[in-house]
Length: 478
Image 1 (cartoon, rainbow, N blue to C red):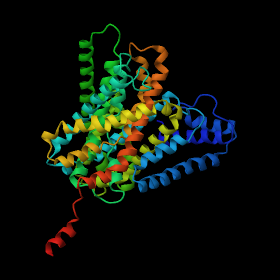
Image 2 (tube, rainbow, N blue to C red):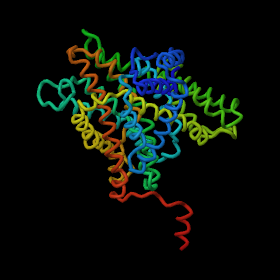
Image 3 (cartoon, one colour):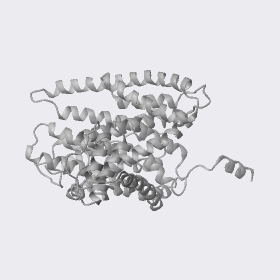
Image 4 (cartoon, rainbow, N blue to C red):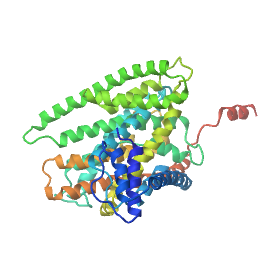
């Protein structure tokens, strides 16, 4: 299976070729040909292997430097990586659609498995029901609201604002909104903790739980939207809705069942096969890939399976002293971070600047609609069940940063929109490019605006982290 390292190797070859003035000719390699074609490209382009290694190494060093610089500015580190990828212009897309599909599947399965590992149920005692409702219901509600806003405001090609009868197709608007349904807790917590740990612990736990749970919820909702918007001609809407709902529930049920089965096998493997903590990375990656692959082969949701498997492993007590939830998270964190960085870097490389410039004003408007309308309404709708204060709810509504998952989900647009009925074939290429550009603009605007303002909003609302226990005891003694 193609992994981010192989994809980055392909980027390195392409960039090195452009640097030598030879351009980017021909089609890019598919997943099964990457390893064999890289030496051929090196030979044809005359680029020595050490040069490619230097380019790839320099890119990773640059991402680390940019990440640190971004945090000093108060913006999420992944935004700096995204911009860095955008500045790299290999002279055309270095990836085939098949490569993009493989990247989408591999990255999301790993990100969701790690999201499950980060979901510790004991940390959200007292507001578990609210957390689930906010994660699932909030993600769906915000996507529906945002989709309607995009439909009302968007022109037929999604290139700008148009208030009339020649609107963007409702299905396209809903697919764009569904791609943007998932939040990113790592970006939020990273920004808030860059200078000081100013976020209350239980609020941080809620945000991490919400971001972990709404990933599979957003993915499944996107699948439902895609199924409804690409229904065949002549099918009645009622019958198609029933079929899609049955398929939707089947995917969830099968994914849950396979995830549970794999989690039991994974526990047995962790207890019996791991004799050193260094082995956790190999076994963790193997479990993540198996949980997705087996579920998908059996007709279930591989993403749900990967998340459920990680969730059960995170909330299980092990007899093996080499294993704990903390060890699993710590061991897999570097791989998860590399996967997330690879998604942002490769998406930046894949995104042509022309796509962004064509929809920049409208994309910014959609981002503001998400931050100021869709996200707050989806959070406030469940305030009556919330154990948090109104000020804390306001911060929750402002903490809906988008990250790697929306970018990874946007890869399905080029395959989904052409299958929709009633779209003028002449408009299809422009509509696809503009839809991808809108998602890119929303993620960038969201990370930049909310990333720069989160700490100030938290201070303005008077929210502070709890003092350390030893400090609280000494203060009480005084």
